[in-house]
Image (tube, rainbow, N blue to C red):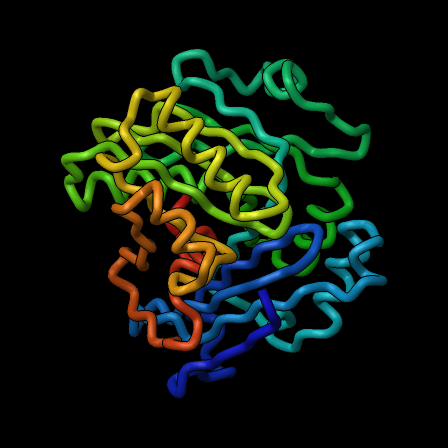
Length: 283
């Protein structure tokens, strides 16, 4: 996505102590939204890709540059939610989860660096916990800047949102949900109002996205023409890429914000920021 920044007319720099800040970081970009908790309205959104020199730097260097360059990240907020976007996470069923074994759970299928810190979130709408790692210097920087910060993995918001969509819409057909990030996609299969499959995959083109969606449909014995495909992230709903997906999944949808919070930034459709917009609901 290209860089953008929008503020609602009602935004007030003197009222940030009553606002929520949701901040998201990945290797190639950072983004945030600011929520007026009294008016129940999104009052600011921003997405900024890192320049080529920053892309090669460590996460902590990116965080430092981000905090120094943006005045709105140097204010006090009522609540701060930080979403870390990366492929490394592990879902553990609730009945098996025990904090004492975080490292054992995580390293079963992921590599833990010496400088990493392990975190976990319970996934709303799913009897499971999501375990993930964040570089320790990143958490230190953020806690020093925002003592109230809460840490999340982006997949926690993605899976919870997929479940919420299925329950709220009372879908009669099963659904597949795809979120397109800068370098990889998240994908879930939802049946009976519950996530029954979650994975993430690298991609280079829309053909890769289509392949993985069809593969999930095959694994879960879903007929592409008889299931919903919810697509979010870095995709234009009217683009040739969407037409490619629609050839196989005619029931394609682009999720909208569903937390009773007003969203008025027409130039940026809500589906472009689905995980970010829902990050604050993961508490």
